[in-house]
Length: 350
Ligand code: HEC
Image (cartoon, rainbow, N blue to C red; front, side, top):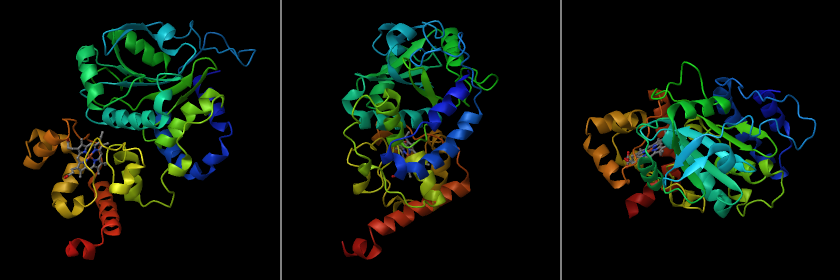
């Protein structure tokens, strides 16, 4: 049985009733995720075919390499024995100089980590493994983790380039020809799994953080533990989103809140500035370009860009490769949301 078959099985497993409301979001996320999934070949081909007993997993110590890795504190660990054996884990591959998908993934995982609270480090573990070990020394990784304010239970790891590449292949997160270490088109690569049950699923970093948290806290744990304290009542309200809103929720909301009520009670979205009112403050042409190519504007030393960069802990806003029209529809959503939360009369009366 290959990885894709396994994943399909996982996906058909009934979800909690509480998730019913989130089907729409799941569908939307799946649409996005499918693009990522399509790009991957299921490459987990276990050495033993078809396990006889349910508890036996074909992906044991003889499938996964026991790669030697070093974490952000300089501690050496073994991939199978120390990181995944008998654990529920999230694994992704990053490089700290990556200016597009990695910051988005890191920010999204940070939200998931906040939702899971102190279970991270106890029965759920997060691993971000660098694919650029030459630049990403433990010190560099430590600084990166600190910039994103990640909590305990989340290791940033580095190792020998060839070993890490082998690991990515084993996890089905390597695309031949596209992925070559420093290639800027580093694909979005996130996998969640339970080594004991052998259940692994690729996930999209655009996934709703509540759904990812639910998979880790409940589905992958075989519902052994009560769910995290976070209730689905806290999940964002579902109404048919406009294109701009959809883009905002999937590409921007992991770093940006939109108004004081939008922290979702967790104060999570504090990596970038709150964006309520931004369409009134900034010139539309500036804003449109910034949403599309903040990295280039920063390189050109645009004064507003430089000022923002200094103020936000030197994390730079990623280039998400949006086109002008998408940027425009996000701006329209930001404008509508600002008008809804801060009607103009109220602003003028102040
Ligand atoms: C990984 C985190 C992250 C993501 C994702 C992200 N941003 Fe940002 N954004 C930032 C940071 C950090 C800043 C502060 C400037 C800097 O340091 O580059 C910023 C600044 C901004 C600003 C400038 C605010 C001002 O006062 O002018 C706007 C507008 C903005 N982002 C919009 C967006 C939009 C729209 C998206 C989605 C398409 C998005 N951002 C996605 C992190 C992010």
